[in-house]
Image (cartoon, rainbow, N blue to C red; front, side, top):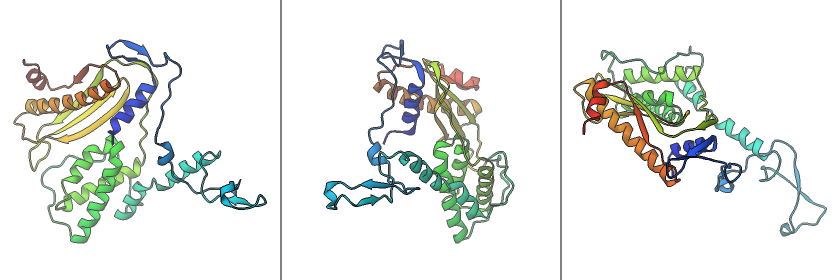
Length: 293
């Protein structure tokens, strides 16, 4: 299955007036006519949603019934006027993960918070959870992890929650409850793909927190990759080794971000689009190390 960033990049191409061609020259997207995004697998992907009104159809000859009989639809027949509306209605009915998280934690009436995570001080309670509480923790944490796949604001929080999956403690439980209270205040996040004149480079932004984890002293790299004004990828990854300075942590983050950007560059090259990569960071030491030849 292709990565989610490829779908976002495809939408970005459809909303850009000009994009680089194979030689890197800006070319109009609609030079051969209007721009369309085709979904080849729509017939299989669209399920038969329940009907919401009384709808009768003529039966085909293969049904073996006489012409005086008609069929009463129980599911939305593909091609009927209200099939797309019924499909969207059914999708909204299953978008209930935030409500389930709040219900499992008993936080339906809790006050929301404005940030999903607070910095650890290192003196938190490390009492292990009971087996039942640990099961609840893993279930809710992974549900939030599912939500984070298209919610950049939850990436760092989910990374911290994942650290407690093996042996969750009271500290991890407090992190989970704060994440749930944040989701109560921000249950839905809309990511826009705006119309834009053109883009010519893959723009990357990164930041690191040196020794951000007070337990392992390892750092985390946050990365955002853009095509013009559209974000196509956002990640929060832990660094495998312990950095001895903020400059070293910044350099490791630079390598991680550049590697991810090269992957997006290769994907665009498969579509005959050539874009250079530009990485932006504020760690001057990391920039100096990365500029060595």
